[in-house]
Length: 195
Image (cartoon, rainbow, N blue to C red; front, side, top):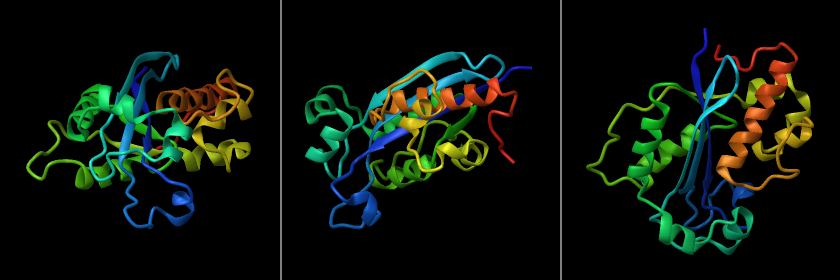
């Protein structure tokens, strides 16, 4: 019996050295700038839908040069195509439609932070948040070559289709995560473990 899962990834504000500092520098907040997701049929691992939205950060409305070079997302992109976080989250939750939302890392924690950072105080999500799972620990155990890699480098490390190096694009990173799951499936291994 097949069911649907959602693989999702985030890009969020960053600066030179912010990751090493744990975003503790003055004014450093992990504000979501892009939410990318794939809806995937677990029986076939075929993509059943794609989600991509840019978000206008509120604490740091001007993106750092470092972030723009890292992701290719510019201030102009966000100004032209970005939406408020609350609207983006509502659209993402609707896209998930109750399916498990899997990330390669604790992206669900960052979504929670952004409910505080970017959502108006009187605005709750329109629908309940989906069940979340961080599949990085499982993938790193099952595929030790991935242990030190960001999501965007998984496909290349496993000789799967995808970019040769990380592009720091949320949708591309979702496709890279999916290729890791397809690699497990090709070895007749479970694609994830929620236990």
